[in-house]
Image 1 (cartoon, rainbow, N blue to C red):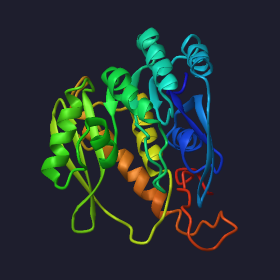
Image 2 (image 1 turned 90 degrees about the vertical axis):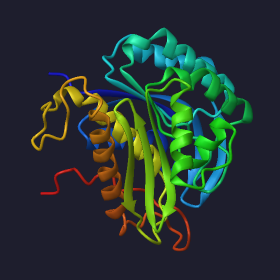
Image 3 (image 1 turned 45 degrees about the vertical axis):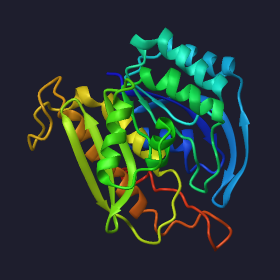
Image 4 (image 1 turned 90 degrees about the horizontal axis):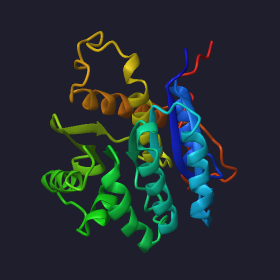
Length: 292
């Protein structure tokens, strides 16, 4: 019996906290096999970005072609792409292999946790015009949602919902806008899907500086979508709808958010940097592994 298989198309991060490294660890933790296509190479550590090296679009496309022509892909997660040439190459690959890529999840990585731009202006425009309309699930944070729409960052839950619906109108069936800190100290995400709109709240962990949360969340959603045929359709608690039901997405996002919260909480004691002050640490993706 083959395992659920997820392809990640994203940047390689040298410190292992985000990008393809975080994706592959997340897939493994959630029981999926991970394949990859590297879109760019980031020289980065816990204290910030040192440089980005963009790959040619044809190099990225050749990786996707090789995997799509051979492996049985259940879901594809797209992360940082960096340049317009790579965005267009990935969009071309999606069109060419649409029936072989499973459900496609786009995390439109545009700005790093330290505020560094991770995509060119031309790349951001190409992302909106050529790739966003092709994907099934779009997962921007608040700043990325605003940038994709050419609007100010949402200042209320109603504005978050409005931006999520506007992004859904561009083509994706499902949009999850993340990163809201609009109610007390809770994090608020807005999910719009064919079954309706959900507000997802979680208590923030004060003082925790981590990098890779966005990559991990979108990778976890991709892994769960790849695994969905394994689920007992009614679920042990009746939380998963009948096959083909639109209720599944809310359950999948909730389970991915639980994995993310646990990975953040269980990384508290990790000391991976030689420097003791500042910096953004990794998440603990190993939490599901048997420690006995």
